[in-house]
Length: 323
Image (cartoon, rainbow, N blue to C red):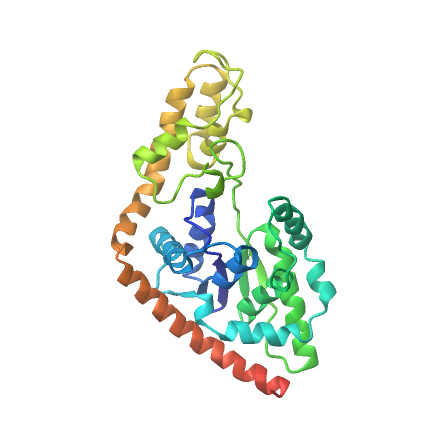
């Protein structure tokens, strides 16, 4: 089977904005030999000065993945820092990767500016080099493909360039992975801003029916609609944006809103019910995986599997480079 590698940084509990990404991973498990990394070193590139409880954060993100349906019998689920070969390959790649390749990655300057405005100093080597560490994460497993959103395409292209340069300078060790572009809907938070735990505007993957309803109640609706029988404008309503993704009868919802046939409270109740149907099986699986020993066992076995593959690759790399 061809291979994929993907991962996420453990920076907090996941929310429904992450759900489509993980569901895509779940679907890909049957088609690819899958490696899913909890990228704790990457969390330090922007959070090195924060008081991160990495052990708890790593276990929490693993619990979220397993609850959505990642199958440890099919996929290696592991912690990046538990496979030290990632760091070794990153170091060796840094010896021949031009500085200009890293500086031109679009997210570099964007995040320097954005996080700088938030008071974070990320003018560090670790932040500049994190796309190269990503390349090492991918190539250490000789991944044929990387499931990503559109914003990550430049990172996959950098990985392809690093693979080409290595293969040309030394020996043809690495495949050039392709980007598997997943359709990731852009969900706003309940207040209209970007959905983020730091904004306290997200719906957690572990949300109870009561928590879901509380969050949906907070969603901003059409400000021009004062009475429930007033004609609505769904294009300006956050509730409607969620209906577009999670409600099959979207045309009926849209028509009822425009015609003033349903009030905003009833519309929110329909959405909350649909979200609860979506999250109920995730909550049920979470009860099984809530035993920390089960999660620890998955992470241990995943790291062992990942380490075997990574060590095989590093033997080829060392031989090719003569180190």
